[in-house]
Amino acid sequence: MNGYEGNKEAILKRLNRAEGQVRGIHRMVEEDSYCIDILTQVSAATKALETVALALLNDHLTHCVAEAAAVGGEVADAKIREASLAIARLVRS
Image (tube, rainbow, N blue to C red):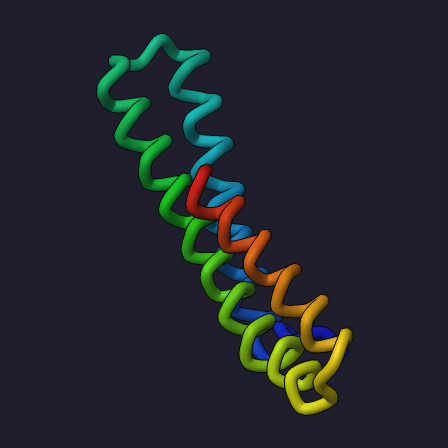
């Protein structure tokens, strides 16, 4: 079972919303909308995806990493390393 299983519907709803925002941005570019208006929508879509990423990260930490920590040893080390790398990717993006 994935760590996000309990939040799957909420995550899918947020992704659908972000997808709609990206389609709207595409339409704005096609219609030659004002640059600042497009940038505002890009920022909103970015925040929507960041919210999904943080929810997934939280679920991963509270489910997958917590389970691995209970097992301990190399399994825990690998999950913690994996989570750290994911956090680093999110921070850099």
